[in-house]
Length: 412
Image 1 (cartoon, helix red, strand yellow):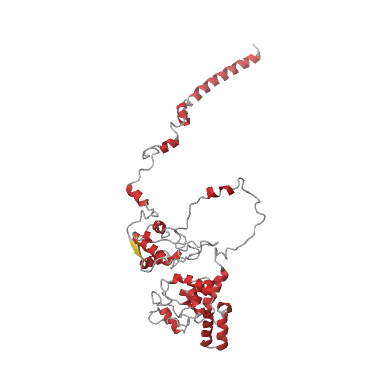
Image 2: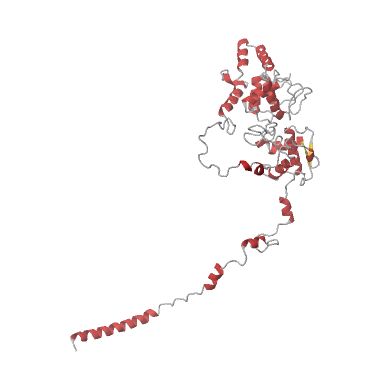
């Protein structure tokens, strides 16, 4: 036997023995892999189409219980709680009633913060009164009085959605009272009017016949283009109006004018107040004569030469004052004093009316109502006469101030 075989045979035999020993011990610590489960049935069930289409399940007859396992049939009481709509023919109106004066109080508590004490609207919050004869203009004022065709819509909306942030908290009588006050603010009813489920349909809204059936699809279809222009349709774009002019945003210049007017005519104001804050003619006349006679003369001239259009505009604006004040023949004190002869009258000087302490202070300071002082007071009543009971928030438009004072100056 060669030397190579003497070495190789024992080595090979030892390797075989060691391999068998290693395999034997290693196999004891290995766990067999589980058999792969048969998922064919699960996959078939998952991918198979439903026995019936989904829409068939939704549209099936019956109350729907058990279809999706969600919800239940609404109780009759729950359906009734949401069944609040009122039809134009009065169907759905609850029994109840409310008068104008009660409505004024409720309106002041719940509505005036946005809509103004006289439904005139605060800032850009909706105006509820006014706008008569404006629907044919480029910028119509659509209010309850000028636009809404059915009073039931007013009642339904107030009852369903107001007051803002606390909807559906008003009792039916309160809703009737608020709607009565809104009608009064639009000069549609007298101050002794009582609105109820029996009288509501008797109120005919001014724009009841102002709506037509929308037939544009038939009458205007022939004017439509098959391929409307989608790009480069206009040669140029030109800005024709500013937001401040449209009163979309406040106009700072006009606001400053009003404030300067208030500051310049308030008792104790600085002598060097801006000249534009007062009426120039009256200021020059008083400066020349140095006494009240010139001021009275200027007021007389101003009244006699007042622009009729300005007076007419002031008459419209005065509608928001009628709740508390009267003018003209037979005018009497109401919540506020009558305003006949207010121009030239001392502040707090209407006989027979009990003024607040704020007006007593104005009287002590010798304030006399003229074009400037009256305009300043109307611009900011609570700022001019601190402590006044007058709840009016003021006229912020300088042109409206001029119109109001011109109108009041016509009553002696």
